Length: 156
Image: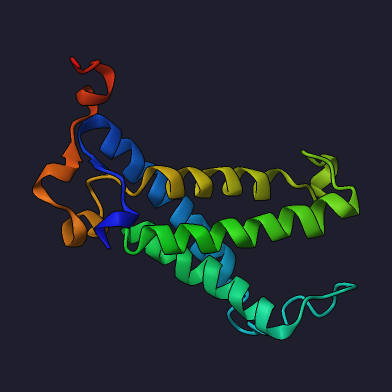
């Protein structure tokens, strides 16, 4: 399992990763929670709605993946689920509809899907940081680096 994780970043950068995980995780849990009442049919009113199992996977990615991101538990898997879910929302829902980046008057836009996609992809690529359950469960003593180690070039 430790192969899935880059070194867990500690220090100020680790706290930054924690803050990003808290905000993205909580937002995705709230976004998915709205759909839990009807997880397999929440998109049925839309034209060309995806199959029920894909709608259910979307709810799982948002509510379950958001909770996992919030805790920093199985972060690569949770972030991958969110990346897939948000890429679907962006490329197969918002952009084909012609939604603007920022909608005026409260209409539909692709801004939120793009921002959460970028944040989820960043979490997937960088890992959860030192202040996560993943670091507690899967870290090796040598896999925790301090933020200052990133700034200093190492002598070859």
